[in-house]
Image (cartoon, rainbow over all chains, first blue to last red; front, side):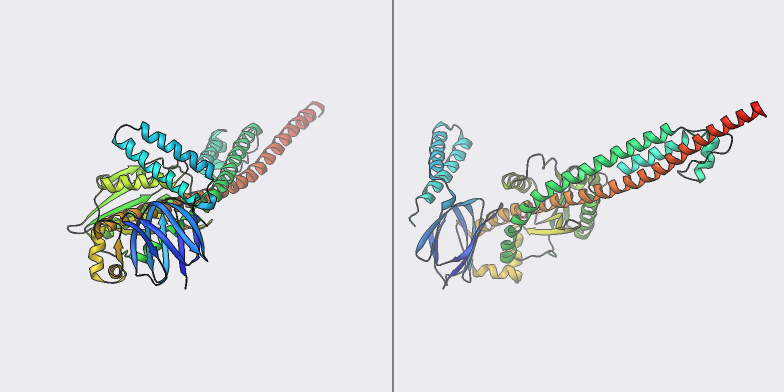
Length: 133
Length: 321
């Protein structure tokens, strides 16, 4: 029993394959989806999407979007996303440090919110690289 | 525009020589058969015309190649973005015939000209849609993207234009820019249904005017009570927000920005394809005109040589005979 997963962003299709299980992070917590899950339409938060294909876990850094789960088919529409194998760990770490520095320097509500978002994105990318496979 | 300039040049051609010749030449269009006893016009004039036509041909050929190379890049991105709006249609269904009070027509057109008839078709479809959705207690407004559409619609529908946005293609199109645009439109205009009018790119020679309909969350609620595809939405357990309507609102906004992104890319592709074919036919026409001018040039040259010979020979025979 497998799930058909499709991860799309405005610029390209990130992933289109059959998987065994996924763990999705929504803004009300993380949900795990196995075959024969109940139909769900949910908003996806900026975070890590973990995918299990044949006992191997893969990570995708997803920057918010929507997911629809039904009939063993999962469609995730994201604003942006990267597969963990495509992320350079060195560069992701540097981006995280830069984002933290920007947050410390940010003044004014808008800058703080933007810096927070950038920080979460950078942190997600670093987490993606560290997913145990 | 290039063809109009050539036509004007042709007219000047007829007016510059002797008026007597012009009257006769008017009947014979571009040919220059001078009546006997008068000098035909110099080859210099014809040569100037040929030079300008050749320059125009070079320019249109270059424009065609530029459009072709840009098209290749945009086409790839358009195809990638097509997969984006299909899940929305699968989830929410497509109801172009929905009857709502407030319609907003988003017309997508190009900023630059010389791209064939695509802008006129978009404007025609928008105007037809306006008439279709008009009625008692109903309100329809325009949001115009692109200079050409704005110029055409401002002439007779100035009162119903809510927002115009130009110069979207100054920086290469990307999703962030379009989502900011979508946000802008959503903030400033009230709507129950949004209808996006654009030219869908099927191939380099075919661009079909298309309308995409997006409903506001309240309209979605109303339609879901009516049943059909949207009725199945209730089967889904909706998570990820405080209330179902908040998630639906987010979903509708996301859907709008995805569909708008795809529409803008498709219209850009169609514009480039139309410009390619317009410039291609333009260079071919310039080539034809060049051929005709070459024939006229040769005839003029031979006529002047013959006139000189006649003068010389008759002068010589007058001296000897």
